[in-house]
Length: 343
Ligand code: SF4
Image: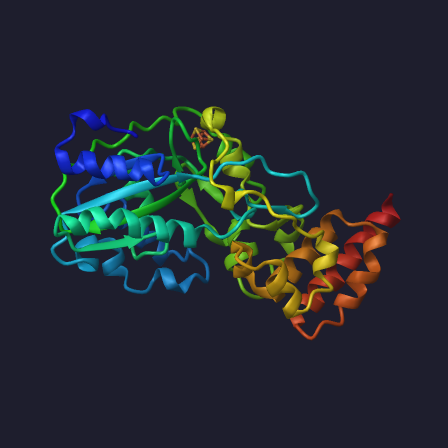
């Protein structure tokens, strides 16, 4: 916990204990005021930094003002859940948070149990497991869970960068915690590590260049000039958070659901049907790309890392009925052939 449970008023102490009993490593409280970064977020949207994630523009006033999400809200409770585990060495890297089963089900179930305490005290509540209309990172920072690093993600002294964040808006008044101290100092490792230079400077991320965005959220073809920079990233990217020195104290998650599941090589994915996709990725966050998006990504990975042994599968994929997959596969074949010729 980031606060001393013994020194809290009774209700907050009860909530802190419940959070710990449910496996949340971090618990903090803040006011329902708009985050201080609201204007910056609005400018980021106006500049198009969110790419084609149009959902971010929807209900923008609500997103910036929690009291519009829950009229009468008097507090926001922030919760953090550790998901760290070592990333397996494999062709086609997968972001750490997506290696196991999708966290939303577990997180939502725990949030519901957590809200039982609030309900028993007469609170009206809105729990969100990172899918709510809230700017959860600056809100979590204000609640003392950590600080927003120069890559814009939340960093905590104990857990490093490997945290799922949840928020609960409540009409109950709770004493706010103090924000955590910002501890990036002169470090720029995350900025330097980004393969596509998506972190334009401290606290400034251009999602249109971010590999997580390109491989997960972006629909359609990945710009040709960015493809070589994607390297072996099949789904998401941890590069900026993995290099953070504050990960040094991170312990492996105790959540069995987050343990790495067996995952196929990119060349196998090229042959998947929709039924294969549904079976192999049942209950996993990786489903978000849909089959065509994952095949597109597999082509990019093979174009960057593949050998002539991968060409038959890629040639077959170049006849895919999805134009983006077909074009990406043809690009990958050309990349491998170029590498082979110049070797
Ligand atoms: S890598 Fe360095 S600059 Fe980036 S979040 Fe971590 S401490 Fe801050």
